Length: 190
Image 1 (cartoon, helix red, strand yellow):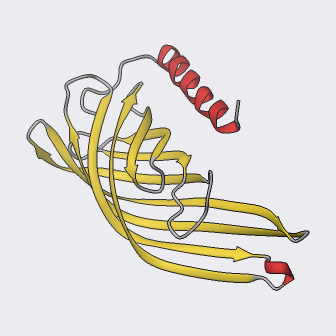
Image 2 (cartoon, helix red, strand yellow):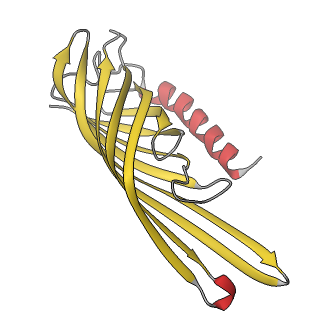
């Protein structure tokens, strides 16, 4: 089993065991007006300016619920993320390596639907920000470095399950720093 598969299996098992150990008494409205959610996630990265194959992505986000809107709330917040890609290859007996690092900073907004299910938070939103992509290779001992700065639009949807008032697990999908990420959320209560 690949390392990524083992990591996902570990997170699923951790989630199931945490549910039993911590309890299922999550808050009735985790993203209720005035509350904040701090999240940490990881998944397969997006190579904005380059990179092929699998590259890991790490992201951090904060959403602060501002307005009540129908059965849910609207949150505003931000996100920072990074993804890494690398490649080693040979050409005419010479070893080469290339590496890409993508960094991004995004302002984001989301709508959190209120399901009246204790512990459940589902949401969808969009954001915009800036990404910086850095490239380097050893280029047959001459080396090359390049960078690219660009606009970074994002669109996402996800869900969280809170075991108690403070801790939950999260999954998020869309065009972000990763097409799919999993992680932990921490609720900051007003």
